[in-house]
Length: 267
Image (cartoon, rainbow, N blue to C red):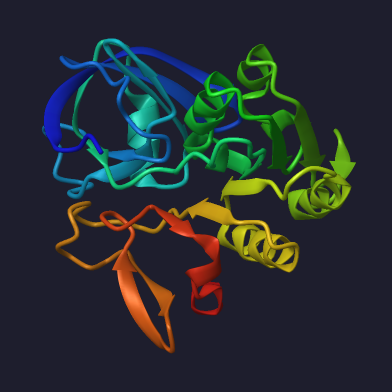
């Protein structure tokens, strides 16, 4: 997997795509087209000591001269990034972690995203479409105003199903309920499931998929300190035969087989 650059990047575009959700394009001195879906970058705002640590952002889309990130303002770091003007420079270590594995030939795929978790999934959807893997995307949001990546997914010609908490669009309820319905209606081979979103959503989806023998990969979104596997601040408990081991999300992840994640210790 490609990994290991630490470089300066310039903000060349920024737009608010939903309330407190921003899409930002970063240009750098190397092409990002070899980044694997699910890999992330560690971003630092130069000349600042507060916040001191870098912040992780998934690589949303790639270009010959850089990449896009898609993020929600949830704290001081993301809030300061959202305030940066076009033309400002940041420092990024990228690409980091391991990405999603595409399914075997002849498989189908179901991609399940919750909220800004779609940022970790769009590049995967793009690669699945390019590989001609029959794919359905299930997108969960609090309301229609928070549905992300709609036009981009529709432009790929991939079927999109929406679930909203308030019923303002699509299925009224959780996206995991929609996933159960789609899996039950699948008449071909059991699809491979891919997901990213809030931890309770991924835990519920793992139960739904496991009950239907659907292999499932999830991208975890743990807090990270160093992004290099040194500080051990992002470890997650994993089943290892009869024992429990701890894996570093920033190095051994962020993508894991959902069936080995010990979700009970995470929620």
